[in-house]
Image (cartoon, rainbow over all chains, first blue to last red):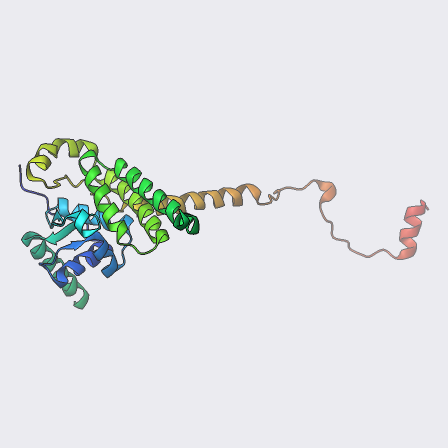
Length: 101
Length: 157
């Protein structure tokens, strides 16, 4: 496969999602937790997560729990990749430069 | 049974929520469908109230529409072997438009309303003719006739 296209349209909601992940880049977050932290509705949030994942900014995996013993279904956890961390940092750096200029 | 009788609405809302999430996930691309359904059901379970879960499910339906719009089935099919091999969703991002689907829908609704108002204003407004017949046209009087002259004129004197 060729090199992945990492271009993502940067909306305000996308920036807010990235901001949540940049607070602790190694933390894995479920969609529900992202919603709690940034308040973005599910109709907007999940397309952003899928979009960022398909562009290689995020990776996701199932929570490693036993649903029967935990008493709840396993969640899908998202985490920034090294590429995503670098690109998100660049986006916020350029954004800050643009605002301050 | 008694618990169900106490709060039947909550059970109905939860059932509706699960059905809506199942339906929404079914609208998503095939390689994402089962994953999204499990993910959304898990995330909806973390909500406190039944109404909140229902709102979440409605949002999921919108999310499925957006995902289908952004990731056409042709692209998903083309990369599905890679998806199976890596266990990772690798989809081509075809979202190169100026506006998101939600913004485009908003602009479409605003445009339809504007066209409707323009049509109503155009069709319902009064039209005034540019030309009036001679009998209806006004004439300037040089002298105002007296009452006696008017009476004489009316009586034919």
